[in-house]
Length: 488
Ligand SMILES: *[C@@H]1O[C@H](CO)[C@@H](O)[C@H](O)[C@H]1NC(C)=O
Ligand SMILES: *[C@@H]1O[C@H](CO)[C@@H](O)[C@H](O)[C@H]1NC(C)=O
Ligand SMILES: *[C@@H]1O[C@H](CO)[C@@H](O)[C@H](O)[C@H]1NC(C)=O
Image 1 (cartoon, rainbow, N blue to C red):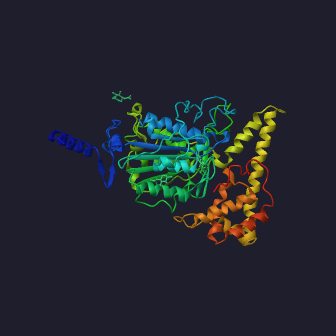
Image 2: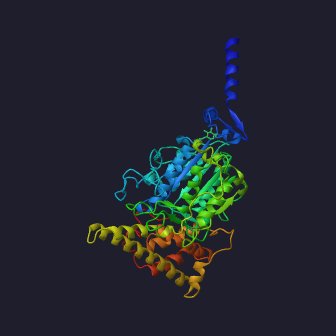
Image 3: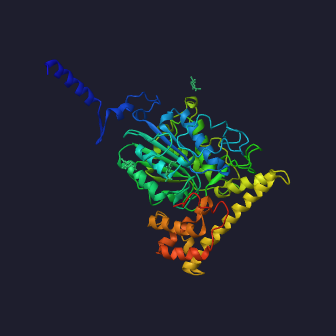
């Protein structure tokens, strides 16, 4: 080897070495480090310009009666896009059955408020249909492409200086979040994935906004401090969250819409972020404002917005996670802003009935549509009755007529997770569904009762026996159907 070649080789090597980033104890290869050379948006924040902003947006439902969850997620996409996040850094999960739904009065269009603009335009179809499932969501958060099945292949390929924002909107129940597919997302698994993400050293801080019934139960006693994660939830661990812009409310959708357009906590944070300079507004300021609006007034009781994890992170500015729309640079945060607090809104769990009922009410007398709507109302109601009665009966079979309801309704002291043994919870959910049919989006409200059955030490054989007695057959309606498999 000539002297010259050696010199060239050596300098090439040192050039290559200079491209290997060592940050903490994580070594990044040149291919991975390339993002450090990409021009970052000039948002005037030193901290932010050092890392990439990532977002994962999840609508956990399907069906036109759940219009609002996908509308929320599309709106969030537009907001982040205007804030300067790049499409390649925003991963969207939505079933995508709304825009072209035969019930949609404006084909190809989705709105998230009565006078709102189309939020569907340009939303990337990363994970749609059956690709919207728990295993793909976890693979995306962890940045594990080999674990992905289907979808666009986009994952959160983040580095140690990056900021991650996760927003989820759907039905939920104690300890569980809905998915348009089975199984549903259980709180312990979600928190395990967040811990794993933290252990991989691939973010600086992470913010999680969660809209669902009993969403406080997803983090209560489960999300430790020290992971650099700040989470806020639409509700505490024991209450419903609320849909808004529903037919019959004072801020109702245009008359041709027979469905709720948004969720209260979700539109509260988004309508706040939409108009402010997010370089000046902190996470905490937004939390206070959203809490106030979501609490409701008048007839609407609303829910209690909660915060979890590293609450100290909430002094950070929103721009770190959401970017900021340059058009808002002169709109600084004001507490008493003009966000309207509606006097009425709709329980998340009744929004499907609102849809079926509004459809029934408006359909012409004697029309096929009226008959269809009537059937839908009855199916939904009879499923509710069946699930409520079956769970109650199982409690009485297991614990006795008087003790049963007390055990089922017991709420553990605050700060404690719903259940100690999550595998037990899932096993008992399957035992219930084997005999009584699917819990489905309404039935997951009984998750606390099933958790309490575990906490009382009931074994799966006893549960099977009790469920068999309570449910001699699975009802034939669509809500009880197990065609998608067990929800656990
Ligand atoms: C998730 O979706 C993919 C693609 O549709 C499928 O192959 C996989 O089995 C699903 N996983 C679960 C847990 O449903
Ligand atoms: C990624 O997923 C694959 C398949 O599930 C798994 O074998 C692998 O261990 C995962 N990689 C990491 C880094 O977790
Ligand atoms: C904000 O105010 C400054 C100073 O008045 C002005 O120059 C700028 O154009 C304004 N920005 C926007 C987006 O309206």
